[in-house]
Image (tube, rainbow, N blue to C red; front, side):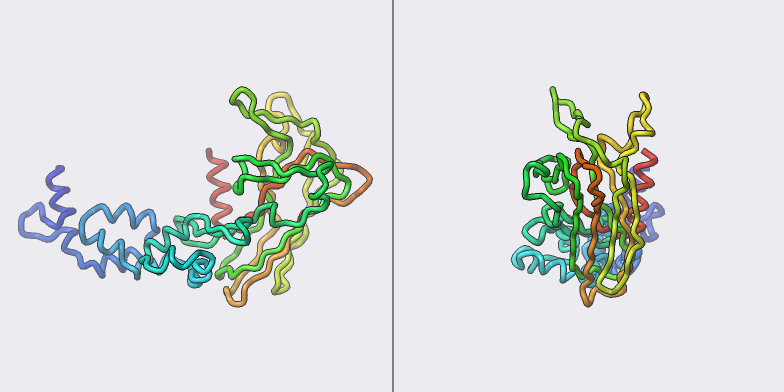
Length: 300
């Protein structure tokens, strides 16, 4: 059995006179590879020499890159990509590429090659962020950017952001990533304190999204805390964990001109204070990829 498989993959035949996979022209294999995902291509590249050659074809990997991938390369020093083949360019762009002083990142999804962006709280306008009575910057490995904004207490809560970027044509979902409660490590274990967490169950937070081509997401409102749903067994499912709140979707039909996206979350009812929350980042991800990730988390 092992010998037969070896003959088949290296171009031989189990009958002795026939053809094997190694006899398929590289151009034909490359044509098939354009319909496969990058992980599938890399797995098949291990079969034999012809498959390895086809798996390195610029034609194959250019079909996996977004049409405007040069816009992403422009964020990187030229010496890092000038002599790279298309396969290596895909590999380079599938890792986070920082821009705007490292407060924003863009990368390609490793399976689909579609563009994803993340924006740190450092790149947002946060009311009162300069006053340490209200906010602190907290360094943490739990943040994508290793730093998140933590709110002790405030009456006027408002976080605004803007991004102008040449998104390729797609439908995108924008979400805020936040955390109720202050976490730390004690004796090697992650623990959360909710002493300062208050005010999020009184009035909802308003999320808004708009784009430069006059798309406007209907404003959504959400209570960030649900103390009334607390039970001793399951606790409060909105406290002590990172949650992504969907703000809305927007459609891009072309990367030229670049799309400007404005987003915000606010609770500006000054009749009560609120606090005990981290604001980490905003993500902009193709909508069906976002839905697929949510489904996988639910199945775990």
